Image (cartoon, rainbow, N blue to C red; front, side, top):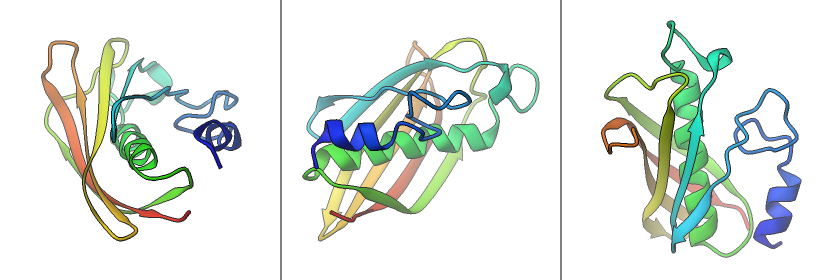
Length: 137
């Protein structure tokens, strides 16, 4: 299965599906082997407190970034989140651009160890995560 086929099969995905009318519609691009980036502006349906993104949405952004990094670092196939730990450093704003980055930090057989972060355009880290993803072929 190619990356294009994987993306097409995930068209209803909440994080990256372009055909999900309530989804985030994230579009990740590989910038180096195993490193992906996306930019987005979250709207009010994704907020917790006024003007601040809901923690579950922040986790979703990081999960998507790390999963895409794992996908691009391995041969085409599918990955599944096995474990994820998130650190919330600063509020993630609603209505302002944010940058999402994910990368592979290591690999042990079919387990990819990943890291991710959400940053302001100025480079301030708003949230970060580590994760383990199982490559399922």
